[in-house]
Amino acid sequence: MSVQDQWRCCKKCSALFYNGFPNKGQCPAGGGHVLKNHNYALPFDVPETAQAQGAWRFCHKCQVMFFDGFPTKGSCPAGGGHEAAGFVFVVPHDIPKPAMAEAAWRFCNKCNAMFFDGEASKGRCPAGGGHVAQGFQFVLTIRGNIID
Image 1 (spheres, helix red, strand yellow):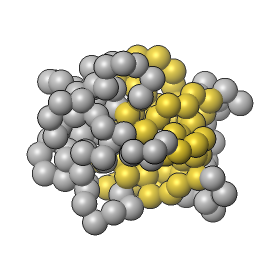
Image 2 (image 1 turned 120 degrees about the vertical axis):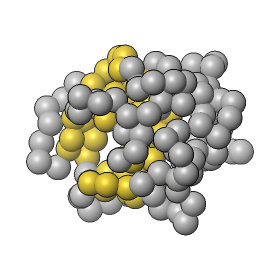
Image 3 (image 1 turned 90 degrees about the vertical axis):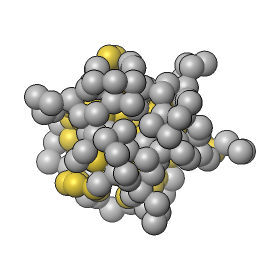
């Protein structure tokens, strides 16, 4: 299975963003995204299943993971809707959490981004306020940690 790592949770907005470029994208809380402690590895270009949803994409404007399966592309902090680039990710959901994985990742029904819903704070949504969870509970594989 092909995977890409360097996906991180932003400690300011709680969205999943790609940390593989020197530029850290555009965070709705201002400036670039700031990473938390886990490095997630996401599968791409594999078949969708009943327990793994496809159509998750990287937004080249803000660098977050967003769901590209609707005609509307959510709300991007860089303006307008998200714009897809790169791989098509297929993310496991509603499965028992394996070792070295984290659950509580959700789709925000206001901005279409994937965000961490496991804390009281729901981050900062580019559509205003905090993120609002809807749908599946995604489970992301942890590839390693960083010290912050």
